[in-house]
Image (cartoon, rainbow, N blue to C red; front, side, top):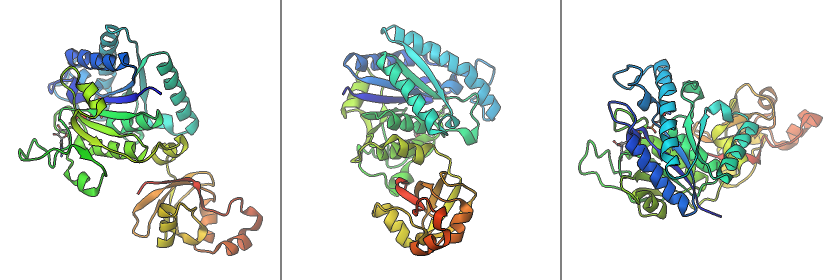
Length: 368
Ligand SMILES: Nc1ncnc2c1ncn2[C@@H]1O[C@H](COP(=O)(O)OP(=O)(O)O)[C@@H](O)[C@H]1O
Ligand SMILES: N[C@@H](CCC(=O)OP(=O)(O)O)C(=O)O
């Protein structure tokens, strides 16, 4: 199978702080991508820059902060962005396709599977899919977060060989090098620990959002789904190839995990939980380390209103998130049997019980 790469380019790499699209930068990245395509790699692009490219054209002096202003700027900037990509790719004989997504598009597994099939078809036809969040219609609670997150979800769903997150800095440093000149760079991160989170700070420029922290969030999700990640800088011809080959100017995040089935990706990262179950220490151990299903006896508390078949979050005794699963009981039913041994559950509910487990292990993903 050919190498499949997801390349994410941040606003800071495509636009100037005072706004407006840097067409030379777009042409440069298109030529780097075309080079990889020529050697047989499939490339999917996740691009930011719509808001930054558009705000000056409609008269704002700086990147707008209000939602409707950002949405207006994105409506203009996304068209400019795609026009620039179309031109830049066509100079290399390539066609670009625009895919704008919001989180609601992935609420149902059916819709998500359909989007995956469309992208697979574009790749079969040799097209470069270009993703961005559909900023003009998505509001905060419907957002993926930022494009670092979107790129991780795309990389997992399309089972990429590697995710390359391109930004204006050559990787993760021991603290933000903009404020600490003595900061040292990490070349390889094998495990994304709380210490790694602690050193990652916010955005470094007037156009970037999320900073290093959102790249670490994205790396965590991608590596969880079996996709290794590069976060760094690509400024000279050949840099993207080096980044793909493991010799780039940046930090590599390794993974030993294999790819997650699409159903579990949906469950973990796209679904909307409708309630929470608090479980005891024994159930935490069984779910997270034992690979077992959750039984009523381990459920301490039930929050929210849900039906059998809905997605719920599961929290440990300290209220820490353990994971998500598809629940086999309605919330009222579950309240009446929580903490009970299985024999007692059968006695009380009898024929009402379709599946004894509260969450079956096949319908569970650990997120701890
Ligand atoms: N520990 C760190 N190591 C490296 N960069 C960091 C760190 N903490 C914060 N940053 C900042 O993260 C910025 C990159 O994120 P961001 O501005 O959101 O870029 P993009 O637009 O490419 O997504 C860097 O320019 C840097 O200032
Ligand atoms: N979707 C937005 C970008 C959001 C975003 O994540 O930006 P960045 O941190 O520059 O990758 C846009 O196109 O302006």
